[in-house]
Length: 232
Image (cartoon, rainbow, N blue to C red; front, side):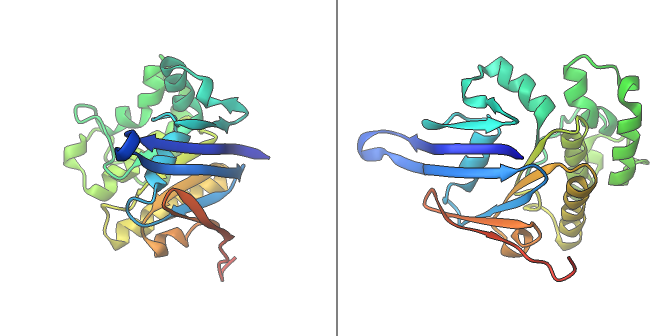
């Protein structure tokens, strides 16, 4: 079943002589439960593509469907609500709220929708256990290591059990050990909750942890291939 579809997606910055084509008529289909990495050199358009898919920015032309919803047609308010419930976003810089503790940062999407914490206590406890953050719930982000902050960001992306998780260089600021932990958490979300993962990375080794790898160069898809794993 198709969970995400991009059709003739283009993004142009500037105009006339200063025009920069970040995305050039990209067509992409991703099925439910896939773990897809998107790799390319700096300036290739991979982060721009992720921002389009997450509704953070709008394409110059083309359309995007997530869960059969044409997100190109949503206004800003509708997109914010849709994103909180259907799309989990994970950033390289974590994007945690510095004045909120770990528990509230993880539950933030639900708090914004007025959902009471006790209504989702079971889901919350499952995620906290998965992330290994049971003893950090009352800590503020600046009291955590980079790896712990990224785990909180992953928890926030998982709490609604969204259809799709979009991760923009999620291991970019992490050391080797925390990179391994972060990738394993994404794999678990993919396996246990059948969540679709789309991960941007410049690191070929990280990209190979996915089951499908798409290479982008100059705003165009250069290759799209299945990744085989020896232990699969």
